[in-house]
Length: 349
Ligand code: CP3
Image (cartoon, rainbow, N blue to C red; front, side, top):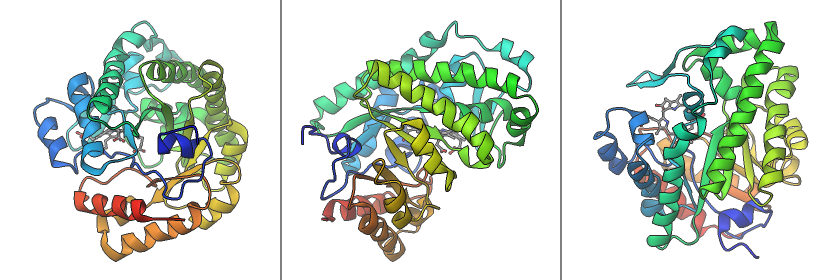
């Protein structure tokens, strides 16, 4: 094994006796030390754009649980923000954006300040790498991330969260050319953003396509697979050694088309994907990451132990990264996370 960091080894296809573990949204409101820092900021975006505090928050779950990865504390919506679309996080209501609904609205976007507006995230990455080194976490890998174009388009068109993103789907069906212009802008922006993060110290990239599952198979190929492939290919050209994890949440069986046609380096699976099926269908092709239900982590106890074991039994026979199937729920007791990490660390296969 040439990789000394377990996460990087697993993502390069090495099967480890005890798999690496990190959790999506491992930094956040379920941690008292996060709430303490968050309370001192006016808004969530202020925290994201204050590098020393964002780096501190990134390190918190690594210190507390000894995770195999730190994921830079930021949000997928920094990309629309950097393209000039106002993004606000309203307490208790989630994100609010001034929605884009037509080709004409695309004129409101601009690449002009893109790098400058994202500079604080790069500083967070550099400070986090320095913090990991200083605190002796030499086996912890640093993950950078981006929303994938389709999921970013969902929020930019809808203007916030939604169950179905019907406005985004409406535009995609009724005006594929205009919608394609938005996806092209985002494909370039995401590529640039990922490259900047790698240059600032990210050792892995994860692409969150949280709303991949709302599309039919034709639109999935066009607006999820194609842009993801373009991003992955561009990153392979510029940074061939950086693994890219794809998370096409809710894709079900379309996730196989995704793996076969995007060249993605690893697949993050949601809780609806049976570990045994994933081991048979995906693991011969790529390392798999996942997929404990965040609600099961919230519940803890025997239910959590049984579900974690089911995942470990089936997936730890191949290249595997233990994770949740979606982000940590804010009511989760930190003790449950501690127990889960202990259980995965004790596993041998
Ligand atoms: O620890 C980590 O995983 C890194 C930080 C991270 C955040 N958001 C911080 C955050 C990551 C990787 C994300 C990704 C993200 N953001 C996604 C993709 C993953 C997913 O959940 O499907 C999406 C869709 C978003 C957009 C977003 N950000 C929404 C819809 C919300 C509001 C809902 C909520 O949970 O509050 C956010 C806010 C947000 N992003 C918070 C955090 C810690 C909570 C805000 C706060 O602490 O005040």
